[in-house]
Amino acid sequence: MNFEELVKSRHSAVNFIENEVMTEEDFKKIFELTKLAPSAVVIVMGNKNRFKKDEVEKIYQPLKLLKMINEVDYDMTLEAVRKYTEKFKENPSALDAELARNAGISAMLFMLNAKYYGFDTCPMHVHNIDQLRSEFNIPDHLEPMMMITIGKSVDKVRPRGYRHPVNDFVKFNGY
Image (cartoon, rainbow, N blue to C red; front, side):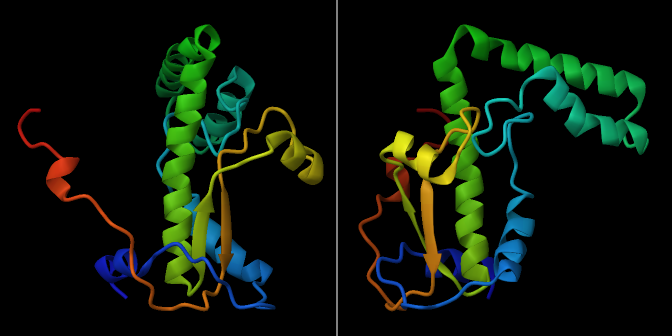
């Protein structure tokens, strides 16, 4: 399946085949591709601690050790991340917006990867966050951004909902 066919074939599944089992290997294949999603600096998948200095060093230190970046680039990167994330201390809603942007990119890639491997998905808003944290022992530094159901859809062909014309959301050469 080429990329255009993949995108056009992905839709939100609402009815899944009962007792369809996904293996750990199925999930690993999907997540191995999902980890390649772009993200702003080091904020990944709702982890509010990722912008702290020791967390940033954990990410970039191996690059320095493998000589993929030199000492100067390493120091400059740490400083750039520090400056970039400083605004989050002053404005926590900026962190929430950044988490949402990054989670959205990763979620879409996850859903496309799942479709590529023959699975269907449906993104959902997260409700009852406290109950979700309790049920799944989610620590406070991780922010649940959305839930995605996954499986094999009963309905392989389903009409897609209305989509706005491209000119409604894209403006070329000005606004």
